[in-house]
Length: 182
Image: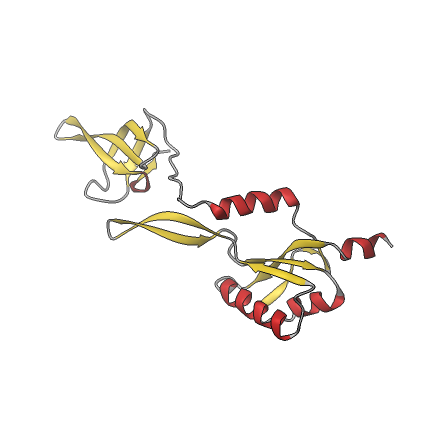
């Protein structure tokens, strides 16, 4: 009796799919829900994405990246029919869970994920501190090593003292142009 109670609850579930086909699976699943009249059992389908900053050809670009490649989230009430509709969608390999029983995503995990997806501006990842020795991996100073002298977290810029011609020269670099020397 308890199992029946759990199955009638509206929850988020994770479905596994082939990597690279997440958007196609989400679109296909939405079409199947509509054509099979499952709107009362399957409510929402999302591919979790977040904005990230990348450097391409020396220019900063904001790109959307999948948070969990190979996975799609579905908000649904699990019944035999709804499970069948999702499971038999092309390129869906199964639900995340034990055996044939899908395990719902916890409410706190979903709230955290939704917050992460709602971020309007991508954050700069600055995982170095002042005094850290770093190697320049991109740009005109590629290959040089230096010591971090300043960090501007808002702009994602890092000032590095690079030794050129026997003297330390301050160079402002993007946080994506350096990596820590281990």
